[in-house]
Image 1 (tube, rainbow, N blue to C red):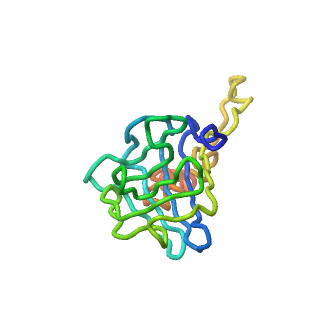
Image 2 (cartoon, rainbow, N blue to C red; image 1 turned 90 degrees about the horizontal axis):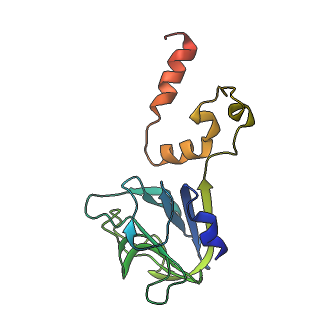
Length: 182
């Protein structure tokens, strides 16, 4: 239950899974809040990734909108976390017990093979990285404009978006401004 508390309504997250007894590390990025729902939701900005044995990013296709699914504490629904696929054919599924998972080829993200070594696997570890807004800036609250860029205050979110292929146009504008090409 602590995991769900950590990710629910906390903004963009990176979920990483290490397959038990294996070196495979993989997961997914959700660019919006996680909310327990009895159906798939999310956005085309979500993606799957493989970290080891080979770094790869799998972007959403337009095949379906089954970006992610998350429920816990339900007696009539599957409880767990899923990126992509169908109910019994997930891109990545982590059961609510955090002991079992599965990964299969997934049309939602265009994967042609499981991200894990085995389609059904024992979970070694799960990490959630919340790419949340920083603590409130007291100077800004006092009416003083904090002259900070989103590039400065949300560095890990910028990094993950760039790793996912999103271009940070404001970096170019900022560079031209600093060079005096206003």
